[in-house]
Image 1: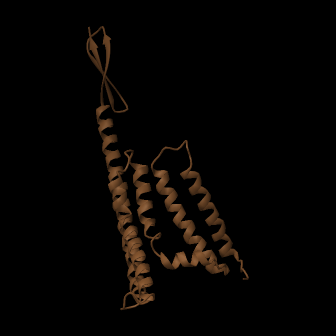
Image 2 (image 1 turned 90 degrees about the vertical axis):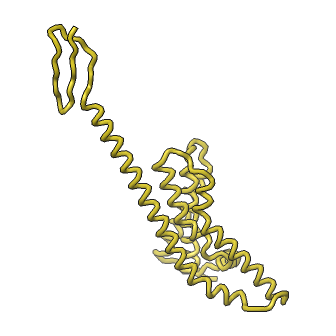
Length: 213
């Protein structure tokens, strides 16, 4: 087996190593207690896995187990890209921890794809052993792959829209809070006493009220 190296696959290889190292640091960091680090690590691992697969294709590196794994689950991990990125953004801009129900719903497309691929593998084994008769697993896979590619784009765009909505919601909430604080500070009662009667003093739009004694 002869490997072919060029600038493209060398960059992919270094990107893969960087992604794996960063993911491991995030996963096993004891000082970082943020929930967002797990979703960022999951996002980086999927990118690293995909980059390594592209590196193998570009360089001519043949790894049998990786080829089998990629043919068995070609899209399952890619389905998690939008989910992980959305959950990472959500846990970053919102202080509250995300409940398990939302995490399950976010990764549901990937879980559905995983269950389908495992069922297809079992079906292929049964067809090969002549326990069942019917359309081949390869034909089913050929029909499913174009639909899965379209579904990946739709799912990712759906999560991208959720990310945009979360950012706008957080930005609007922060702006409203800032306006409320600004308006509350427009009238400031100092509580000081002034011997010659009540007086008001303005500075930069803020009004200070002095009370007489």
